[in-house]
Image (cartoon, rainbow, N blue to C red; front, top):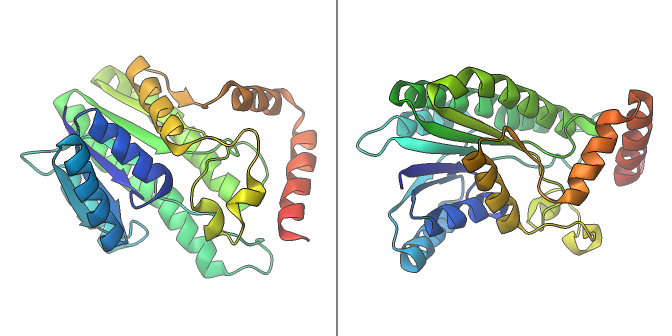
Length: 257
């Protein structure tokens, strides 16, 4: 079924992508910083699904990490046929008074890494005339909810732009824009996942399956769950002043400004 590479694969949505892809028979390259978690996941995927797995310990927010992942994308005899740019994290801080180094790290992981790895994968895939790229954006794209939303807005616009360029060359691109997912993301920004749980909380596997279905169908954007598609449609039609007011209020409440 080909080789799929997933960044941020050690937990959450990345882990779900790896499992769903393994269930489909893909060789899976697992990329993240935490070796122990990656190795445990690799063993489980091999035992449960009988697929070959590879562990690549790398921080895609660094030059060294990007270089090692880029080298693996085009490596033979198993070049990557599906790239999932999933690595990311919540900043858990307001911009004013927040740590600038954390802001820069988020930009490196959620914007620069997506740019560099997509560029590398697109080159190799276009040369072969086939391939797929899934870039994880967010339902927050297009809002004014902090720099995280700004990063994900870029991911969405970038994915839509290159999708048109790559489609004639046999490469499909999906911008995945999930809403709230039940993962460790919330603990990473100092929040209790049970307290942020909503009736719209989605399972990570459901989101991964939705993204892969969108890729198979040739769709460029994927917003899992009709409730989030409705929210997104309202956001797209609402005056920007209202969008800003609502998201400012939500952002201020999160950080008690």
